[in-house]
Image 1 (cartoon, one colour):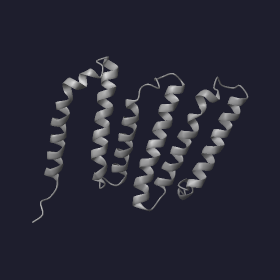
Image 2 (tube, one colour):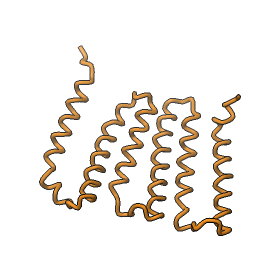
Image 3 (cartoon, one colour):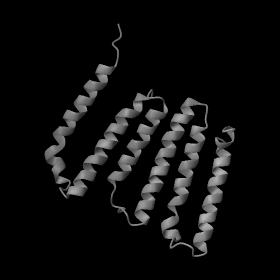
Image 4 (spheres, one colour):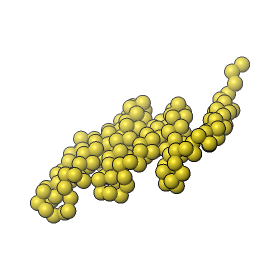
Length: 172
């Protein structure tokens, strides 16, 4: 079986548009209890999936890495928008944005074959910020707890710097 036909980004985008068109047609005909107020994130997800399809079909490693990073970011944002429009989570859950960007950096790191180590520090920082503020929101501890706990972040940053320095070979 020839799999080359399935890696063509135009074919993937065309199929996705046809499926999305059929779904939207069913929505406009009253088949589902969907409306534009909760279905619009599909366009964001579709754009992200298109970027991912283009990236996976690219032979250029740099474009693949950046495309996967961008596609992950856009797709996850669309998924978060879906979760908010369907009332699963609140728009006020802003730490999720930090976690989504951290996930995009991690996707870029892995797409590079774990060679783009420059993506690890932003992923760690944004992931830590997202986790801390999400935990504060979930526990109801309030942001005043940061005033008491911020020195721990300096300790964590120091450990990360030491770990990164230990990984680098010494010149000389």
